[in-house]
Length: 175
Image (tube, rainbow, N blue to C red):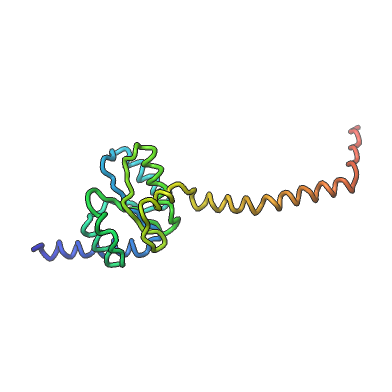
């Protein structure tokens, strides 16, 4: 029987993990077996830049936390080496970063499962999210499509104005 101090610290970890999972827009569980220290540092930097919280987790405590917030689907995948990436911002960022990193580093990482916007996602779906551009890139693309017709209209109106005004008068030579 574990002593009371250890039990209380484990309860606090479960509470912290369940809070983190419950508030996240995305959670991705990752098998990080075989990653080097340099690769881990690079991965953590990428997560930090994207506003993603990443940490190695204990399977039993994470399983208890996931069950506490209603996600019992991860009981089978929470074994072996497991880390967890969560975000409260861009919901595809964790999956995208893991997918890109795995491709670049000979599939060192593997997605075990995850949650996006409160729904459990398959590994295939999370890997597909990894192919999508970032939220900011998608917004820029949409804004670009909105601006293209307006820019074209402004150009056409300017051409009509120039045509009606006639050729611009030549500047007088400087004396």
